[in-house]
Image (cartoon, rainbow over all chains, first blue to last red; front, top):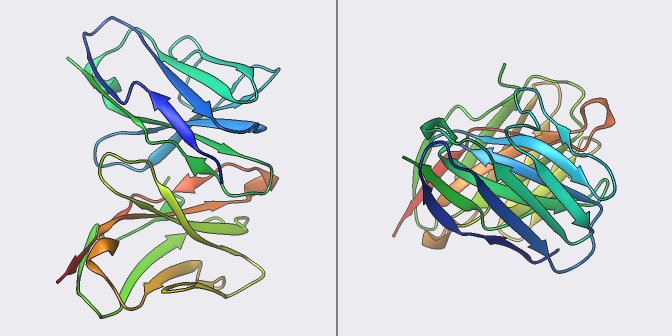
Length: 113
Length: 113
């Protein structure tokens, strides 16, 4: 397994602003994933971030709204841009290697007013 | 279209008894299934997995059963303990050889002392 940390753990933001969430892993991993869990909902994959290439976004998610960086094998950021109350969610990063189980970070709880 | 379904949003079980959490899926291409446990304010924690070549996998108090013909899997916890109280998510992957996890909506288990 891997030890994963996220910053911030929670935040309250005003609509129209942006928030960047950081994900740090204690070992090198090939794949990092960003998920969203809206209140009472399941975990939904936003995008996959592989080092050295652009992130791959799932249907319904676009780069302009959720830009992602993956500068090295232990770190990634997700920005939630031009936020609205509908973006209030828990944002989670996870890491994995091909064919192996994904492990999740503790999550970032975001409230947009 | 919800490809992975957990039809019971909540379950209460007496301590020491068996907890059975159910999950149904619709995509016959899924070949790897997992269960995650999530406590409030924490990220999901991997619990147990099963490959489609098996119909049962055990790890201590936790057993996952897979019925491919019925597209159904279940998690058995025996004996249940108050510390098992959490939200349990099932997930599936393997569609078109991808590593993407599709999560169910979760079942909140409460183990009563």
